[in-house]
Length: 248
Image (cartoon, rainbow, N blue to C red):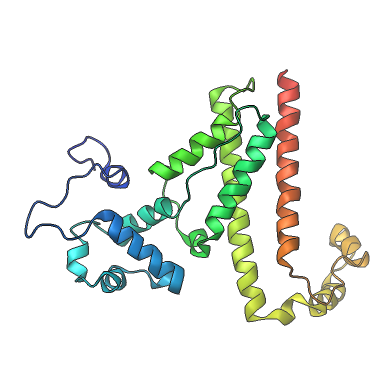
């Protein structure tokens, strides 16, 4: 559905191009007010606590009043997913593509980690809001000096976005799991694997277990999670470098 701008209504809402409500009293709120209040609720109570009624309570308004600005909770989540992002970093103009993408990826993950609930927002389509597109543009700009075609640049950046979102969800849920049941991350896990992993059925995993990789009193460590992400990111960028070398 499009609005008077000719854009899909939700994109017009994200960009602040939709006209303010015309009926009733003069609007006392803005879409930005509603979005900011929803983010405050999510930061304090988690994404599950966000509802039109709870956000209205946060603003000291009636629930029905919010529907003059945002049509549904789904639309509100899309607004939150854009507004919660920081502005993208300014990448060095004289930097190489790998340094730029490393900086970009590290910064976007750092921005999202300020709001752990972000990992649970459903993805309903490609980036469309002003901040999401600003980040997209920033990532693409890191590849400006490469021989990649425009579609290939999109593929590289989308791969990094997938990596970031996977890491965000993994790290948030792992931290929550450790907080709820730290024993599950101790030597109990190693003992369980040694008991159930059959070398004939799972030879590769059996070799890992036999090497003592999981023989630790505490398997969860936030710094380890970050190191594993850096390792994965470097492997991905090594792949991009190899592709560029073939193209050259």
